[in-house]
Length: 361
Image (cartoon, rainbow, N blue to C red; front, side, top):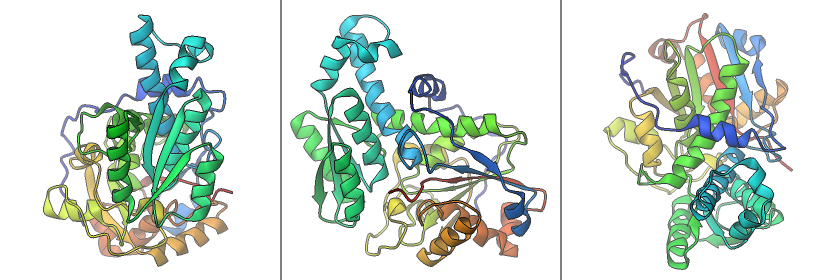
């Protein structure tokens, strides 16, 4: 679905990439993930250049999500520490007793399909806090096992992702826990914004790692957080890249929202292989960023995503159907003359794309 986007619109940044980068880069596990120029794939798709950001190894986990939940926990604790001590938090304070005491009394909650919860669980464990993670019944057992390995208390909620979101929010409100959500109905909610702030480091790295600016950014979406974080950062590039969003056909929440011109929910009556992206309502914060920036939105089927996994494996990328969704969308667009023309893709186009997760253990 093609949309009209004003290239001249002056859009202020909604996210704080500088604060996130300054804190995350102090983590001993931090190193940039690779951004790989793949001329072979670019030629096969009729493009001038294709740069792929591969998030299979990130801060000891296997997904870009490790940038968000853990950062939000540290940011929350840092603000409480500053309020209590009257001085600015620094990396040295991680090891101070006052910070550790504060963290040990803190309980964080999150809803997840897997990766966001891993980040929250890992962040909580790192500072000595407690993590209560809510998953829905479609989450595979191996993902639940990984959450427990990170020390999380896991509750399985009947239904789909949105049901887990509701239950995490309800219990956090009742019990006084800190809800670390990666989706929100309130664009002014600080914690989900911190999660997206963390994701912007991925986008900043890509700007540092490449020479030619992109003409197009191809990004997949569940609730829209990754795409929103990248585009909030990349909209400062000149010219601004066209933003092409890819969603699962089983959960086309942004696609249908763009079509109707307002944020809506879609039915949750089907499931496919892109379980990390099967969200049935966008995040309001992500929607507010993406609505004026998205050039086109496409859906891909589970079969198309699974084919993309195989194609990427042959090219040396280990990922899942969820992680391969953006590549599946690019492949679909590139092989369709009408879609290429609608999106402005040519043999001179420079495309940036994110593979969001590795297959994991």
